Image 1 (cartoon, rainbow, N blue to C red):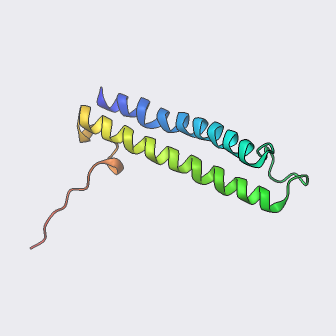
Image 2 (image 1 turned 30 degrees about the vertical axis):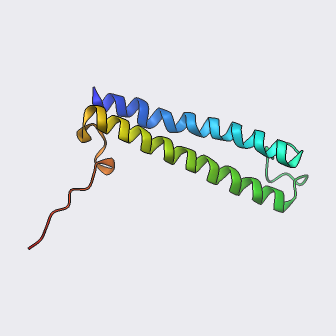
Image 3 (image 1 turned 30 degrees about the horizontal axis):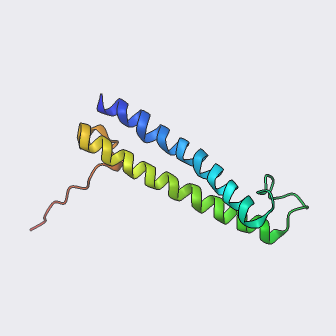
Length: 99
């Protein structure tokens, strides 16, 4: 059950977070700049500086939202189903002492 929980929460939640973050960032961009968010940053109608700014803002914003949600999902699955429910790369590191 735990592995299934990770597949649903750990994979689905970051996708939803990315979608929600993009919507929030688009809204914030339009309110602060009084211009629509660039849909096609390579369009000649959009300046290079505006295209770069939107790319940085949206890229960082979406990445941060995904990271936060994925960490919360991993913590939730770990607390409810144990560390073994997570993929190996997300399990807590076991420190072995070398004498």
